[in-house]
Image (cartoon, rainbow, N blue to C red; front, side, top):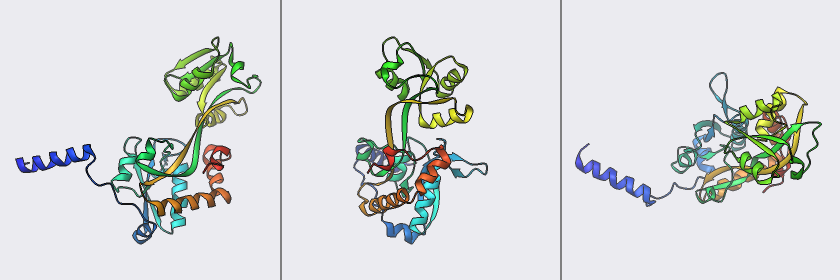
Length: 265
């Protein structure tokens, strides 16, 4: 690379870092229909929302939602695997048209993308044996509770647990679940996704005692794509009302679409 080219690349890099390069143009419904396909960014390492199937094709809750959205648009769907760190940059750089990528709706992220109403949600709760009486945080007194160290559930359980609760911290959710199944702990703090795995491993043995917090996930479009956002929100209204979104949730998470998702706008 010659000196002039190196200098040009350096200037461009500095401009990108400084935010001087114009943002991606807003996406339109007509542009997607004209292209005949919608490119959807999706995580493929976040089961059951995003996985790769036996044929190495993207699958899961998000994939089914993306396919349903493409059907509503009247186009084919191309699912583009993304990661947590690169999913928003992929959207901003036109590599995908929108994200159905388990993206939690936060104020910070909303500075960079426009979010639809929620289409999914993750709740963090305390789970334990069916016959264990726990209905409020005070009931955790004297109980042994397992959590994944430094996780959202660790923070949530620590915040509400009485001083005499025994919080045992494990390296990951899998270790905490094993501790529950083996009786090493009486309760664990986990997401509803992990709770589904517990139910699959030990049907009917455990249930949710407390809900600690909830996070809703939205479909993301590029900033300023008001027409596209209206289309997506109208689509979500439709599939919530006619039961199609609930059917996808039942398929992948084994439970109805949570009320905090169905009622959110």
